[in-house]
Amino acid sequence: MYGYYHPQNQQYTQYYNPTIMPNDQTWEACRDRCARLGFQPGTAAWQNCVHGCMGQNTIEREQMSLPDQWVEYIQPLVDRALEEVEEGINLTHLFQEFILSGVLVGQGFEPEEAIEQVELWEKGESKLLQQSKMMNM
Image (cartoon, rainbow, N blue to C red):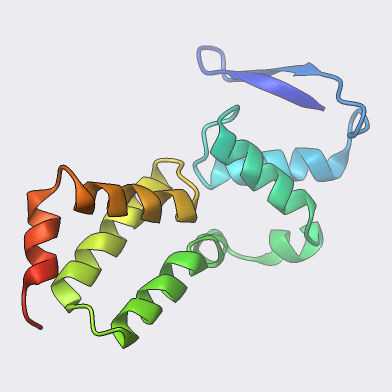
C-alpha cells in the first residue's frame, strides 16, 4: 500500500496501488526502514529509498545495522571522492564538496543530486568553494 504521512498524528493514510498488494510485508518493512534512515515519508527521496529497498533482498537488508545501511547508501559519494583524489583535486576543496554533499543527503537528497547541487554552488554563489578549488595542495 502507498500512503501519505501525517506528521501531526504520526500516522499513514493508505491508498491502494495495484502494483503492491494490500498488507504487503515487504512494502511495510521497506517503508519502516526508510523512515528509520531519516527520510521524510512522502518525499521523492523516501519513495526512491522504498523502491530501492523493495528491489533488493529485504532479509539481507534487515540484517544490516543502520550505520551499515547509511554507508551503503552514501557509497556513490565515496566513489566520486576517490576519483577526484586521483585527479589531483586539493584535499581542502574535496572535503568541503563531499561533506556538503553528505549534509544534503542527510536532508533527503539522492547522492547524485547532492553532488550536482554542490557543483552548482561551486560554479555560482559560493565564493569559498571557488577559492578552495584554486588553492594549492
